[in-house]
Length: 473
Image (cartoon, rainbow, N blue to C red; front, side, top):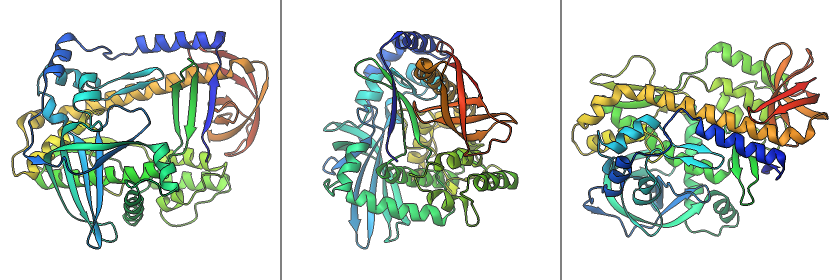
């Protein structure tokens, strides 16, 4: 599906939006600036130099254009009838001193927050965007996972070790996809080959990917704010498969050692499945048989009803959380249901707090050492820290979108707008998708409105400062 972009033009609405976003940033209930002691500690920090030297291996990174906090780099090659996958992760555990000022700030933040006009990083930028980041043509210590895959893409062996690496190329998703499409980049043919094999593996173990369109507020060079909505590119999915492979291996190591932290999500219950089936039938795209992951993978991205189907499917992907353990495994199912296997967050330590624990434990266990005391002593704190940070990030993202969407709609106050119902919310209200400008909103709808039906709304008022929009049916 092509990318859709709406923008707020320079105007009174633009000025009011800028003020609203500034107020939102200033009102965040989280630390924004780092105290001097944390900055000084980050500037002086250095990770141990690994004995293993992999600087001759031509690693590459793949991220959104302009990214500086580069957590992962990959190198892929054939190995007999199968493949060898090297996946290097920034050695944040080597840079951050447990109990130090940087560690304390990271625990307060939980994750990097992304705003319309920048970000609030998990670590001081001298670490996250410079010294620990896997920037191109720079020597960096890294935690390198090496996987052996067979001809079908199944993992047959793996190891984790510290190594010195040098990334050779910083690739971005859009140009990488264009390069793959014209067979023009030597880094990427194997990424597609392995990524597609791993997608088959995902289907066979019952995994499912929701793949809702990305929705992001961006600020252009001329000061205007845009909402960009697009479906993830194929190259993003292939890259994500490498991360999933790593997260499952990390879970395997920690489960075997009976110490660690897993990302879990329960299987949807029968009530959720029944509701989703009714919703797909109402949309004229019925899920009749097979696993729900197979159904979602088969949806046509160019079908205008795919978005409402995916929005409805979101009810199947609820209840994700973290579970920690030390000495014995927790009761219950340890799987992340959408992945179809036990899974751990272990590939984004520059941007997510919990990954540092996973990596430190996995590295120690893989080398035959006990998990570090600092990680074990603080394991129990992680679920609440991550839950709090996730709620903060979700709230910030929603409030930012609400304000930008209100500004987009401001010129249309007093007019009638066509929209599509994507989620019913009670007897006479629904989430609706407006095509132009590309806005999702909650609005009153006729009592007989159904999923996928078209409605005409009267835009009565907007409040940019609070991100509120008022419609009448």
